[in-house]
Each structure stands twice: as structure tokens, then as C-alpha cells.
Image 1 (tube, rainbow, N blue to C red):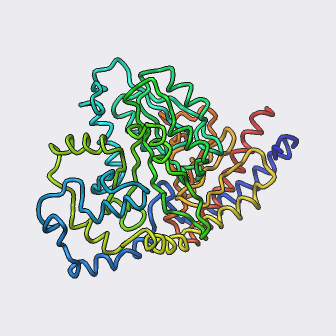
Image 2 (cartoon, rainbow, N blue to C red; image 1 turned 60 degrees about the vertical axis):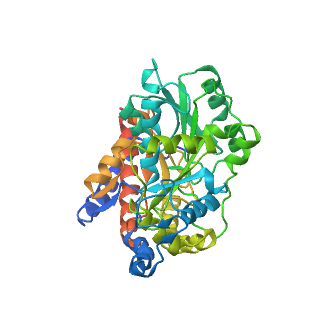
Length: 425
């Protein structure tokens, strides 16, 4: 039900007065909570500190020589194997890089714009280049497109993933559509996991453009909040069976496993794509930071141990997500104007507040709680319904999170009451 639609104007005014009193009291506490980005908390970052403490004891000898010297442009063998096991592909289908997967994705688009994909024409020589952008989605994906002047086409996100009827129709009929952004597991910001059917249809796509690429940003591949893992079908199994393995770039990094921005990242792709990318990367760098790769392999060891490390992260994150769920359910469990996702992994919660998202974010900010700008989860920050807000619970302590959700609840109530009063008048 719409909570305030049956109230009279005097009732709405009185309710607004009471909520405003709560808001003023919360604002007066002078507490500041930053929930703008999905950053690991300090407590999470401490988990990987033994890696640095033991750095001098690691063996930096590799099959190709000394990791502290030049060579191995695709990354050291043990790091390629570690990510291959994570992606469930072969080691020669992996390149291990520095920093974050965002850096790889930017390079992929830049290479395509300047040089083309495999034997395709450079995208910057084409009249138009378009990307499909399932939304709400990851704002950094959209920023890459905006930076290169790529036209973005919004595709609705369903509970199963992108609307595949729409995706299939669009790519089959427009050669200028060159890519689609996907966060397939614990999607940013909704937290959904793509269904098997969605993965199968994605891996069998028949795009008109031969150089179309799926950017499979598997950023939260091991980032479950609970012991029961939500499995994601392997898109390469599907694509290889359909003879379309060249169509997929899969990305991941250790940014939310070890140190944000200071870890290692990797791309899984077909052997043809790997060869093509290494040729283009040859002019950019001699090799990645192999010292960092040795350290990460020594610390993370294998997929099972990565899961053990991530269980420690989950124990820190889970209470914050559960606190949000509990307080929002108490406040808006019967309100159709307020809906939110219930992720079982990842770093975000997607909150929908019908028609008042910008006002909610502004009110919360004035009370000391910062969220990503309303609309940021859509291309060009254009959420035509003014509804979606991305919640990032990772950085605040549980106590700070408790305060932030109180501010959020009061801000939502004020915004909805103001909207209801405006409609009545």
C-alpha cells in the first residue's frame, strides 16, 4: 500500500512535523557516515596484512626466472593458474595484471577504439558505437562509455539478470552495438545472481557486430555473505559449446580480497583474444608487478583458501547488511513506495523510493550521511523515475550503520510526506 495516500492534509502536516523533529535530532548528533562507495572497511583490510609482513620470506623464483626482474608479460605462471581455477578456465586463457579490473576494462575499450578487436575496424573510425547498459548498474561502467563518447542504451534489470528478450533483439538488429556491461554475480547494485537461463542466452548471443564483446565483470565472484554459495553458471562453457568463446571478456581482481587498488587483477578470454591483447599490451608495459603477484599467490594459495579468507570478510560485512534489512523491514515492510534488494553477497543494496530519490539523498547528506548521487546507477545519471539509491554498507561500523539507517528512514518519510502534500495541494 501507499502509506500516505489516504491521509488528509492536516494528518500529513502533523506526520511531517513529527518526522522533521526526529530528523533535526539526528542531524544535531553531528555524526558523519560515508556510504558513497563500496570500499572495504579498515577491519577487512587488516585481514591481508600477514601478506605484507611475510613478504621478505617469499620465494620470488618462477619458472621463467626471477619475479623481481623483467619478463612474463601475461603474469607469472602460478598467478595465471590461480585465476584460471577461479574462473574455471585454462591458464593460457588468462592474463594477470596490476591494480583493479576497472583498469583492464578501460584498456579493453581504449584498445578497441584505437586498434579494433582482433581483425575488426577501430571503433573510433565508425560512425557510431553503442553499448548495452543493464540498469540499475555500475556507474564506473557508464563513465567509461561517457569518456569515449560511446552511446549507452539502457536495458532493464530483472530478478534473473538483464532483460534478455531486449538484449537479443537489440544486438541482432544493430551492428553499431559493440558491447554489454554485466556484473553477473551479486550484481552492483541489486545484488542479484544471473540465472542459468540468462547465462546460457548471453553466451549464445548472435550479435550483428562481429566484434561485439560481453564485458563479464565478475567482481564479486567469491564475495558471498553466507556459507551457502550462490552459484553462477560458467559463461565460457556456454560460449565454447556455441563456438562463441571470442565474444567474452571475464574480469576479476583482489581489490576486495586483499587491498583495494593495490592487489592484482585478471582477464579470462579466448586464446585468440589473449594473443591479441598481449600484442597490444606489448607497447604499454614490459610486464606487470610480478613481485605483487608472488606475494598474492603465497598468501591466497588456492581457491579453497580464498574462500576461507572471504569467510572472514563475510563475518564483518554480514551484520551490516542484516541490520539494514531489519530496520527497513520494520519501517517500510508494508509500504509499496519503498522497496530494496536482499543480496546474499557483494557490496551493495539497491533501494527504490518511488519518485523521491534525489530528495532523500539530499536530506541524508544534510544530516551527515553521504550516499552515491541519486541516478548514478543509470547511464548519464538519468533515472527517469527518480527512484533508485545505491546503499554501500561496507565502510561504516555497525554503530555508524545504525545511525545512518535511522537518518535514511527519517529522510524517506519526510520526502514521501512532502510528495504526498504536494499532490494534495
